[in-house]
Length: 232
Image (spheres, rainbow, N blue to C red):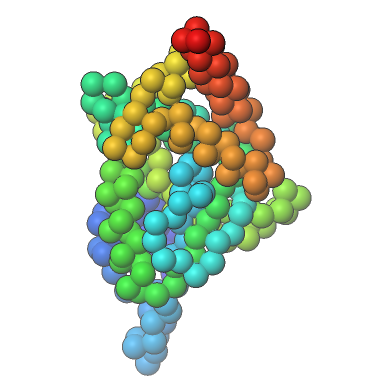
């Protein structure tokens, strides 16, 4: 039974199935084991982890919000944005996750219980996160000293470095070059620098000081200040 469940989860995490299909597969599997209980279905809440703009703007109905972190990942401004914070001609930069053993990434997880809210949320997220080519299912921790996660199986969208699957991936660059790009870029959702500063503010509000992000925000402020001084 357990091995079948693990295989099912592996299958769903490796292939980005439409949510309605993946939800159906898991719901079918989670029926009680014996035929006498086959009509007794365990209805599980869906959890979604946000480490970027989802922290301050969910955009869907949810029942609970839990501040926490995931292990062995770090947040980086390596994903190009041509649909929200930039254009195809001049992409912005948004955050994605990259594997980083021993590190943690703080953010916010949202619990969605009602079936209609799950369907609405995933439909919304599949459009909002359409340039993120991978879903992962991770453990969420709320206590830095805990060895057992607060929630398991939390869904998170990731933009992978595979250029065949994710042509908008930009990858690493110097703090100065990334900040310059962020300061200049603007898209349908607004200036890229607004995204950077909003994320910095949202993380500070939950007590997280992300060095990569704060270095970028400080450099962006320096560039903007220098530009204003030159203009005057």
